[in-house]
Amino acid sequence: MFRTVLSLLPPAQRGRVAGYLAIEVLSTIVRAVAVVLVVPLVTELFGDDPGAAWRWVGLLTLAVAIGWVVDSIGYRIGFDLGFGILDNAQRSVAAQVARIPLRWFTEDNSATARRAIAGTGPDLVGLVGYLLTPLIQGILLPIAIAVALVPIAWQLGLVALIAVPLLLGALWGANRISQQADRVAAAANGELTARIIEFARTQAALRAARRVEPASSQAGAALAAQHGATLRLLLLSIPGQLLFTVAAQIALLAMAGTIAWLAVRGTIGIPEAIALIVVVVRFVEPFTSIRDLAPAMETSRSTLKDIRTVIDTPGPESSGRAGELTPAAATVQLRSVRFGYGDDESEPPVLDGLDLEFRAGEVTAIVGPSGAGKSTVLGLVAGLEQPNAGSVVVGGVDLGELDSAHRSTVSSMVFQQPYLFAGTIRENVLSGNPEAGEDELAAALRLARVEEFARRLPDGVDTVVGEAGTALSGGERQRVSIARALLKPSSVLLVDEGTSALDAENEAAVVTAIGEDPRQRTRIVVTHRLSTIAGADRVLFLDGGRVVEDGTVAELLAADGRFARFWRHQNDAAGWRITSETVSVGGN
Ligand code: ADP
Image (cartoon, rainbow, N blue to C red; front, side, top):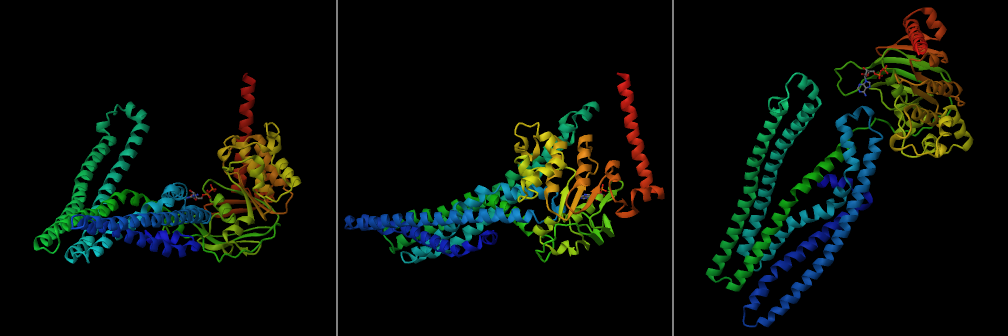
């Protein structure tokens, strides 16, 4: 944990750690002195000249005052370090999230990334001030008190020094036991939650089958398991609680016994013995404080673990070359590309040694059955995914050699499910090219037919699209994302129409955008729509990760193969739709 905290500190602040530790050590010494000063104070009070005790009261007050000053400086540095850790951790995680290969983002990993960025503020800021500081002082203070006791009564000091590791060990053991109990309870709770959700979701089926009693369902079994786990949690936490309590009592007894023995022998007087009892009680207090920190430590540890998981996830291997590609049409090549989702090498890859070339400036339509690997090819060209073997080369530059920032400048992409940022339509489109002039912006808005619907909105293109574009319809979001892609000065335009059902308006927007894009670039479209395919210079029919047909529409129709069959099928489907509409209109 300490190592993670150190590694998360911004380099500029690392030098302050030594200063912070020195302050904490100083604060501990001052506190220990204040505790031990009780001994001469009480001794003088009961001595021949009680007035001499004022001297010690004065010293005690001074120690307390110095303690305040030192502690305020310590907290100040602690919170500065905390904010430094927060800033650095959030920035590192955000930067890493932008680099990690997309296949890493499973449901679990996405949740980890979300926690690592969003849920960490107060935890990280308070990490030093509220957690490390009391922890360091909790460990150092008893040691300092024990050492301070040596000149007063060395036998007691020795017993206290021996008690420190034993009590810390007991705390550690108790914590381990309760962690184990928590794990058992968490697993049972997780199972119970899953079963209850399932039980609720399957109510219709269960009622139809007349199996609605919770007790006889899997939910009943999970409830029973959770009941058992709660019992085990209680039973397991008892030895944990007892371990520390018993150790603390033994330490107290040993020290009280030593004091009594020293008093009986006459080594110390009765007033000194009374004062030492007070010191011994103060000696045990910090251990109890450490025990109370355990839940907060657990939370911080899991926060730091989430952050580490994201930061340690290997990004794409790249030499980080920041080469610029000219924003003009470029030849795109897939050279012996092997690619599979997931790390399981035993699973057959989606693409296995695919060689493919998209000629500069051409519009290529990729067609093929679902699962053929069409979107995967686009993801690789866009640099969203990296091949396991082979390379993707755009304009002679291997994408694998570019750093992620430059890789993302190579192509513009229109996704099946477009994502808009919170902000206005204008801001969303301009994010494709923040330097674009008004004329360029207007052209992109017109080509993507954003203008048409924006005109009807109260604030036009300055209308706020809402969180993730929720204020716009699906088709409108699609058109904004097309405008954004058109505005981006990239060498390659990638459009994934996939299976998305576009209305006639959107379909026209896509066709116009691809056909009339004024920029010289290579365009690749994954589609099943005849209108889009008809405008393509070349068609690739993909199946099972391989190109099975390659040519112009006319050539492939003449060859009468897979594409021709697909084309006829699409034509028939379109024809059927028209017929059915005609029938329904006629029927009215
Ligand atoms: P297409 O676009 O031709 O429908 P894809 O490229 O989307 O095909 O998918 C090719 C294969 O890869 C399919 O078997 C699909 O299930 C799988 N696949 C696609 N995306 C992912 C993903 N994110 N994680 C795991 N497997 C995926």
